[in-house]
Length: 320
Image (cartoon, rainbow, N blue to C red; front, side, top):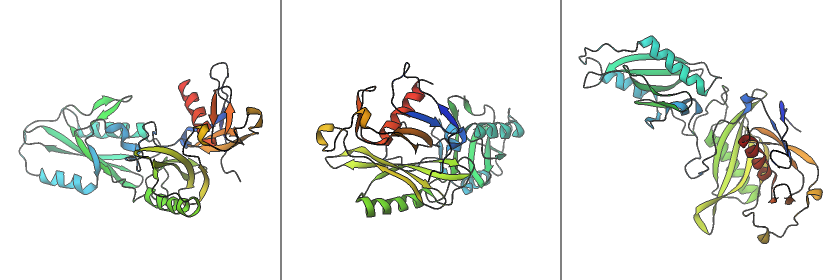
């Protein structure tokens, strides 16, 4: 039974880009959270909360807790200072909230700035940020210059910490807090893959989207190559209900796309069957029934629905 509803149908014009199949994009609030363009599963099992992506260009923002902010403010008590900051407390609080909203429009943010001074007497603000679920970050900001950067490229702060997304605690998806953490979802999937598919020691990339006010995890699966431990290959994709752990869709593909190593029949485009709808990376995509099949439009053999869906999404994004 399908639980997803298409909202906007994008028609790909073959005269501009020749791709078989079609793709339907859901409303923007259903798009996935994370950017998977840098596909490195060895260090990307858990992705940083997207609400702080745009303020970490300096690399100075770490995983942390509110206690770190309190210690910084406490240690600064009694320091002698003479400089009056060029940026007021109200101005910096307003600017931090504005920057946070650039990355996550679904959460309500508040901030509270505390003025401190470094050993040279330079004024800094420690700005604690709160969202609908409590404390989420603090940032160290020079009170004379403010953060550096811009809305397009992102911002750099002098330091700070964000609510620890270690994977052990849930993180809001488009403003909705799932009941399962990334690590809990990973354990459920690991058991499913090991029990029913004999897959062990896979690597995962977890992103999220919301459909009908229900949060879902979109999980990409990769395995290490037995012949080359430094190399991984795409193994499949899973859509999981982030509240219940129910696996809504699981699609696995073979290790190699080399047709000479495959025994199955390669269908012609006429044998590929009807178009059917799947949800891939939070988007509804129309792909074929039978795989592998040869697409003359792309001069390519597709071995799975996900492989073809990936190309459809990529071509659409390249030309829009």
